Image (cartoon, rainbow over all chains, first blue to last red; front, top):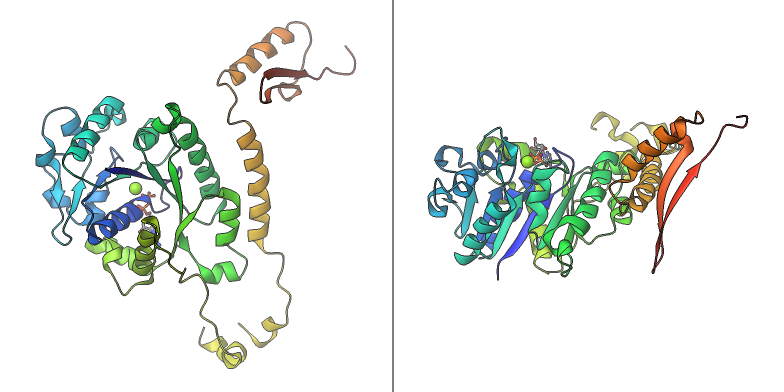
Length: 273
Length: 84
Ligand SMILES: Nc1ncnc2c1ncn2[C@@H]1O[C@H](COP(=O)(O)OP(=O)(O)O)[C@@H](O)[C@H]1O
Ligand SMILES: [Mg+2]
């Protein structure tokens, strides 16, 4: 059975595309046949983050309009077995994704044996974001520890609970996962940033991971490599842990504290820090 | 960090203010989430009708739906100026 997973947030720029690329890649690395679909029509960034922008010929919108078939549009990743990218188009007409069109594409993907279908949602709470979450079985709610992001995540949780197909049909609710990104332990320690516990208290859904603010993310996007493949980086390792938790494993949380300094460094470390 | 920072009390952390503000606003927003979509339009129409007879301020007319397990009540509160 295929699982449709929507990566969503309400607010823009919080790390949805970064996380979709990392989670999709992580699931494929674990042996699951996975496709990541870019629902952000008009912007189209997933192909860049995945490093396959020069291989895009046909896209999601072409397939929905019947101008190409699935196998022409799906891009097979060259690094990871079982991983496919489904880019979107840069058309300005954002309403081209119809519910019927999307449903047909998802059914065809399920027919091709995909186990995970990751939907990278556009920002906002309008048509595009609602279409991206409509068919979700599970949702990854990406949140930065910051007031507007937390508030928007709360609204998205409200929409999942009222407008997803599962909600409309009265089926079992969409399974929700909280993914906190761009977390800065040093700023949390100084009281400048909401803590993981604060965000969890407010949103009250299970925590699948905490991704630290990391220069490795920018470096990965520069080279078109999902950051989870940078196994040396804290962000890469944190995404690996998050994917493990997503599939039900117990993993201790890492990279959430500032490395402890000794008393000597506290007293005389000013010059160094 | 300087030598004295270790002994200095930190000012009220802005993160705790953020948490409090979020809890308040979300409590309010969650309560209104199940409201029918026509409520804002109904409020506007009511304002127009009542405005024909008496001048009232927009924020003096509140429309809400109160629910319990077996019924829903449309509650309309209109505050009038003291002298009419
Ligand atoms: N953990 C992180 N550390 C540092 N920068 C990050 C992190 N996660 C995301 N970013 C940066 O934030 C920006 C927005 O990320 P993106 O994934 O495109 O967000 P969205 O898809 O939600 O709009 C990008 O520049 C990305 O490199
Ligand atoms: Mg994006």
